Structure formats: structure tokens, C-alpha cells
Image (cartoon, rainbow, N blue to C red; front, top):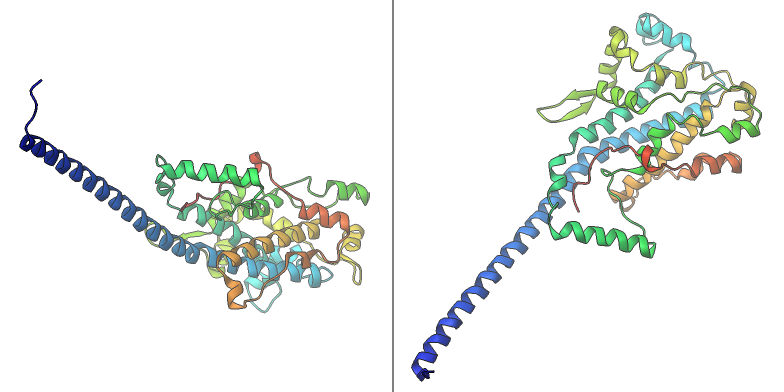
Length: 344
């Protein structure tokens, strides 16, 4: 084999060095671009998340506060009154009473229906407002596998997992499910020997979705907002087809009145043979759980804003009833898909 002279070897090594340098420079450039792109995506994702907070969290939190106030007032102050007498709602449907004169009784019952409907409207708006195309953004990247490893590690080590409100949110799902769960208070009913008590638990998920859609108004090409009370009220008294979808919400409130005074809530329920107040308490408790989690997500504690402890709702209840409400969970078949996680 002919030996290469020194000059030839130098030329070969130089050429090889140039190739290696070009390759290294190319790889460094590639990874630099990849890192920059990842950084840009993280910044865009953070901005998107902040936008979603303002778009969804704030209206939902506002609705929950108003709903909490109303449920508290009904359960603790108005059960022995007649403000929720069905006759006031019948008058409104016939364009009488409050419908003909705002000074007449009827606002309390129709606005209570509106607050429940607004909650369904907001959950429907969350679903419609989430850009599902972003769900597959990192579908084939290493991020997908890294997230799976984190989930496995968290489960193995028993660590708490932070859950985005847009991905199978369990608190929203529980609230939705309480409206339709017929067996929630079965053990309690048997313990108290109640006979076929009055209840309202037929707000099935498709009816909730339908009500949510009825409560939404287009606000731009791809945006939605919940009907104002005036818009809801006008549709309710004028459109029988619109009103049809709200009958099962009406059942929560109609004739929820004239309970005995100066009795504990459980005694009132027992004497009236009507467990709807207990269902409203369960809804209120889980609304406060959701409020707490949203407040944490928005860092509202740092602003010293009012917090409403969920357990305060249950103070005067028996241990059995407390346990029934607090331990209510969903299995996978009951979970409602309210949206998709926007950012990893």
C-alpha cells in the first residue's frame, strides 16, 4: 500500500475537520433552533393560559359566588317563607304577577333558575371555547412520553397531581352529577325512614348540555357569552320552546317553601318529607370546592380576597350526611369531558 505523504494527510485531515465542524455547527444550530422554538412555544402557551384564565375562570368564579349566595339564602333563610311557591312561576309563564309588574313577587324563583342555567351555560362555553386542535400539538414528541412518565411517577410515589380545569375537571363533573344522581341520599333516606321524599334529580347530562346551549349567545365568529338575565327572562316568558328545557331546573325550586321554623335543616327535611334542600347543600359544598381551586389557580389569596370554606356549608349536619356529601366521587364512566388541556 502506498504511503500518503505528509501534505496529503494534512489535506485529508483538514477536509475531515471542515466536515466535522460543519456537522457540529449544523447540529448546534438545529438544537438552538429547537430550544428557541420550544421557548417560544412555552411563552405562547403561558400567554394562552393567562388568556384562558380571564376568558373562563373569572366568569365561572363570578357565577359560582352568586350561586353560592343564592343557595345559602334559600337553605338558611327562605325555606320557611313562600318565595319559591310554584304559583309565582305560573304567573310569570302567563305574563302575570312579576311578569306584569316587577314589584310583584316572583323575581326570587326565576332568578334562582337563571343562576343554575348560567352555570350550565358557562360549562358549555368552556367546551366550545377550547381550541381542540392544540391538544395534538405535542402528540408525537418526546413531551408526550415525558408527561406519561410524570403521571406514572406521581401515582407510584403518591404525589398530588395538579389538574388543569379544562381536562376532565372532577369538581365541575361532580357538581353536574349531583343534579342527576338519584341514589346520593339513599342510605340517609333509609336511616330516617323517609317514604318517597320529594326530590329533583333528573337533570340528565344531555339536558344540562341543551340548557347550556340555550344559554349561550354568539359573541363574534368563534366566541360565546352567557345570556344576561334580561335576555334569559325575555326568552323564558315569550318562547315556550325555550322554556321547555328549564322544567327540570324548576323542579329544584318549585314549592320549596313553608318548611317549619326554628328546626334544624335535617328536621325540616324530615317533617316536610322533601330532601331537595340536602341536594342544594351538596351542590353548594362542591361549588365552594371548585371556587377554592379556581382561586388558587388565579392566586387570589395573595390579593386577600374573600374565601368561602366548603366545610362551613356542612357545620350543622349530622356526621352521616357530611360523609355522604364529602365522599361523593365519580367513576370513569360518569366523568364529563368539559374540555381539553391546553398546555403541558
